[in-house]
Length: 71
View 1 (cartoon, rainbow, N blue to C red):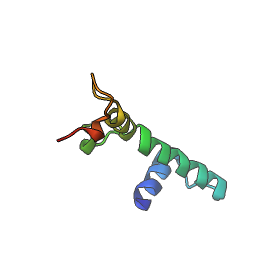
View 2 (view 1 turned 60 degrees about the vertical axis):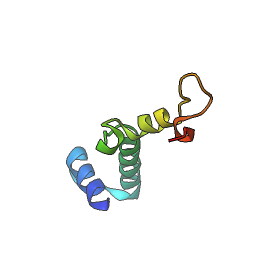
View 3 (view 1 turned 45 degrees about the vertical axis):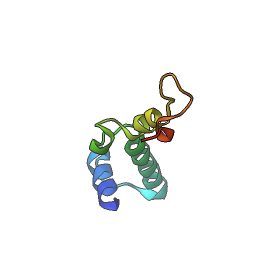
View 4 (view 1 turned 90 degrees about the horizontal axis):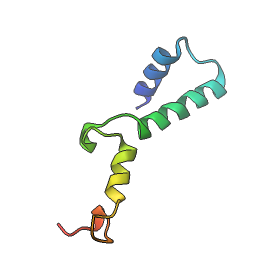
């Protein structure tokens, strides 16, 4: 993961980051993107945040969320 974050921040932000504050900000922005916007094939090609929201949404006509449905 470190390599991905490092290469992403250097190609998207341009030259190497200057200082700990800039590195912290870039890391937090990357984590926010990774957890909310990127698509992932395991999640059905939707962002993880959308997948989690759908997973916890009640099933139509019941009070049970998807995770609590009997298989």
